Structure formats: C-alpha cells, structure tokens
Length: 461
Image (cartoon, rainbow, N blue to C red; front, side):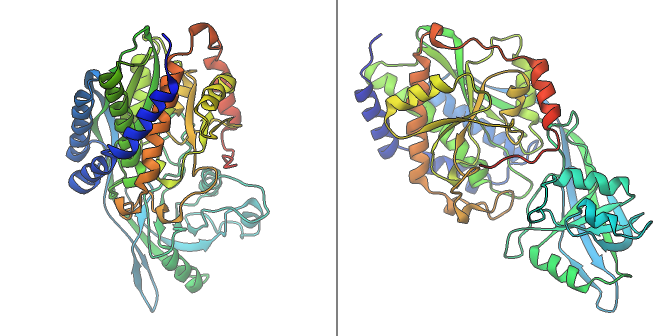
C-alpha cells in the first residue's frame, strides 16, 4: 500500500492541535477521580474510564486484566525529638516501610559514605537512628542510597531519617529499594523523610545525646489491581504488534497530573488520532498497535510485571514497546532504546518525519519504569528522550506529592507528544518484516547484565 505521508502528517498534527481532549482526560483523572493508589476504588474507576475511551476509539476487545497485588498502607507516622525543646516533625515513611516504634540516639552520618562511617566510634551505630543525606557527596564516587542503607543496616542501625530535597516544607512518597532485586518490595532499612527545612533544623540541634522516637503505623496487605488493554488491529500483519504503554496509578496522596495522568492522556490521544485517521481517509496501521495502561507502577512495577508474565511468552512479543511516563516534565526530543539493535531503523523513521527528533541508546538498563519487565523478558523497549536527561521544567518538580497538579502541565507540549508518537508508530507499523533486525536478545545474558549493573547509579546524560 502506497501512503501519502505528507497528507497523513498534516491530518494527524492538525487533529492533535485542534481536536485534542488531553486536558479533559487529565481533569477527569486528577480532579474528579483524584488519588489513584493501586488497589483503591479510585484506581478502579480510572481503569474503567480508560477502558471506556478505548471502546469509544474503536479499539478491538478493550478489557481490564486483573492481577493480585502486594500492597502497603501507612495510617500515620511521626518523629518526636526529645529534650528541653521537645518537638514533633511531620515525616513520611518510605514505601513498603514495616511498622515500627523506635526510640534511640541519633547519629549524623552525613551522606553515609564509607569514609564517614569509618571515623564513627565502634558500637556507636549499634541500635542507632541515623540522619543521612539522600543525595551524593560532591566529587566522590557515586554510591546509591540503597547501597549506603545496606551498609548502615550491617552496622546495626535500626532506622534512618532523611530530608526532602524540595523546598517549601514538601515531602513525597519515595522508594529505597533496588528495583533490580528479585523482591524489590523488601527494603534494606526503615527510612522516614522529613521536609528539607525540618531536616536542617534537626541537624542543627543534634548533640551526642540526642534521642528521637520514630513511629510508623503501617501494614502490608493483599489487593487487586488491573491493566487496561486494547488493540488497534493491523491491516497487513495483524499478528505482529507494536506497543504503547503508560500507567494510571499514583502514589498515596498525589493527584498524579504529570505522573502519570499526562502519560495516560497522551496514550488515549494517540488511540483517538489513529481512529480518526481511519474514519477520515481509511488509513490504519499495518501492524497491530496494542495500547496498555498499567496499574501498580508506583508499587514497584507490579502491573507491567504481571502483564509480561501473562502474555510473553505464550504470545509473540512486540516488535517494540514505547513507555510513557511523566511526559509533562519536558518537550519531546526523541526516542531512547534500551537495546541498540533497532537504532538505525527507528532513526530512519524519525528522519522521515523531519522534526529533528533523534534516537539514542542507554548505556545502562533503566529500571525505573514499566519498560523494565519487558527488558527482563528480552522485548525491545524504549522511553522518550525528555526531562530525565536534560531540560526538566522546574515547576513540575513535585512528583509523588499532593502538589503534582494539572495547572503545572503544558498541554501544548502534550499535544505534540501525541501527534509525533502517532506518526512514528504508524510509520513503524508499515516497515516490512524483512527490514526489522532479528530479535537476538537473550534472557540469560540480560539477567547477567542486570546483575552487573546492580548497585550502580543510573546515568542521566
């Protein structure tokens, strides 16, 4: 089939700019439904909204696929500082923190680097509660926070206090596990976070006899979540797929505008643009494009892990998975692959779009999003080149908190995301099978690579 790409591009971009319901999708998810912690009724309503839109946009067999969830709930937490000026701080425990009530001496370990721990008197860390910076010591070797926590646990530390890096007395949900672990819900040490301002005050007031009481009322509990799936069936090679994915859940108190209502809205808009193109001029993808919205991404990728376990391998794996996460944090610059084999093919298709978009390859496997379970299963995967690398908008630096609200999004940029993605996916769907490199990725080799990269700091540029 010979396509007039100039006409297709004009139609898609015009529709993306003029007819976009992206803002309405974000408002529905954030303002009407609200916090969408996996396993909650709100998360279920968001999944139903997505399934309804898939049906509206004529995707084949829109469905919600259930999976069992290992969830966690914190009912309350506190940090009380003993002394003449006894005071309490607002704190937030790390996700999957076990319940605890500890009273102990506080030891300031700085960044928790080996040279800092080496000068602490023997036995001082035993049963202690430490104050530690989550960032990296300037000019020093970068050691992950998870690795530093493991060293503290081995030294007998019972819990840690850290401060948020965001101004304005903000705290946010955070993880201290290494998502490369076989059981990433297991944490090396209980950690609570206070605000940057209260953390500084705590550090100023510490003495050798300072004691604090840390209380976390939390529990682990089973639950259910679901992934939402719909297919735009291909006209020539329907058995072959490309996949576009996002996640619809949020952290415990966040409306999740950028993370990740924006990603879901772009996912839905891409499906709408393809549906409109078929209705207007009869053009549809040659390969099937599968749209998936995952649950429980914030609870350590449980939704995408369940999806991969369910579908691959009984199903033929996709030619390529592109995952959308936090697109509102920066304008699109291109595509970043987890593996190099598809780079020439993807770049060639980007070049035909004439938008200056580029394809790059990661030097490390990115474990921080829903593409990672596909990586483990040797499925070619990609994210979009944007904020994670350079140019993050400063007013969206409120992820995983109640300040991640729709007013911080640039809807013009999200419209561009949808238009460019639709054009790229449509082009990839028409690339003949013989032009695709054979998938020679090996699960065992990838596992070895993950093990070799365990504990390394992920490169951001």
